[in-house]
Image (cartoon, rainbow, N blue to C red; front, side, top):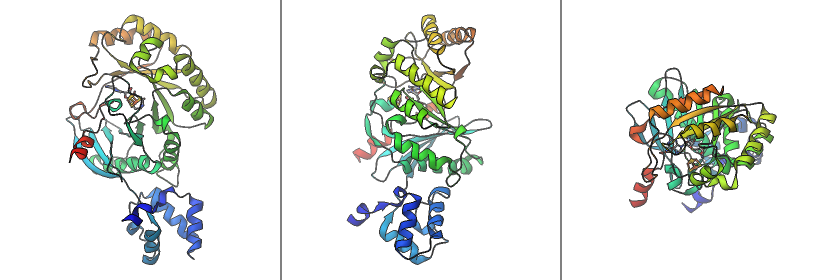
Length: 355
Ligand code: SAH
Ligand code: SF4
């Protein structure tokens, strides 16, 4: 058992390192390519599955390495067919994903961390604090498992991926970047980056890094209110990443990538849903090519917030449209099973820790 713990996860090795290992045990180089294909194209979770390798080679791999694959611990189905998945990690921690079927598409919502350190007042994940970052292969595994589930349950391929589950992806930058590489590369899952959206609370250094890395996936920013003091009061992260710096970082991102940004704006009754709030948002958006997703608030116990009434939502939308902004209203899915945005807080986690 101790030896198992000491073994390296083979998915930590680069393609070149696998070649080095294969040559060092006297095997032919093409075996390394086969192993890579098993790991990243076929999402193998054990060496046993690698059926085109000799039994002897599979045994040698097992002696040296492990594959710490993510497992599905529980699936909950909501009234609207949204599935909430509890993913069990090698150390027993749980993270969550959601599979959302809509008419012509199926979207996977995945996590980048277990919990989140940023403590936004409206978010259940924030309440559970940060347990740890997810490794690149754990982020990749969520997509591989949800892709399989999309076929099994709905007979359809996965069409979109949003990194809007637990955690702040830009505070786990390297793992997220590497995971997206394996999700998008032709030697991996081969999913187009255009179908992937990363959502951030607005970590300005990370946004600049994305720009420098010239990423091809979409960027969404959880803005929620365009007034500095009000934003500080519900999103502590805003103090170290003020709106002025966020604007500069997003302009830089646009300059480098040419990609329009999506602002997410959670409508909270009497907090950020007045005409004045809409005016501040429109003024903020003037600086950056963008569109706005207005999001229905999903109640989180103890947050003190309420969903905006429909009349406010209509007024808010009409004002933004009158300023020529592109506005979408996002209704929540999976509410009855707490699978909606901001409600992911791994109830199982508590259950497992008590047991
Ligand atoms: N940490 C990143 C990504 C995960 S949160 C971020 O903050 O962007 C994913 C989205 O869910 C964010 O837009 C977040 O603001 C939103 N969200 C959080 N709590 C919510 C709630 N109670 N109801 C609706 N959306 C919520
Ligand atoms: Fe973290 Fe995003 Fe939730 Fe804020 S909204 S606590 S950044 S997961």
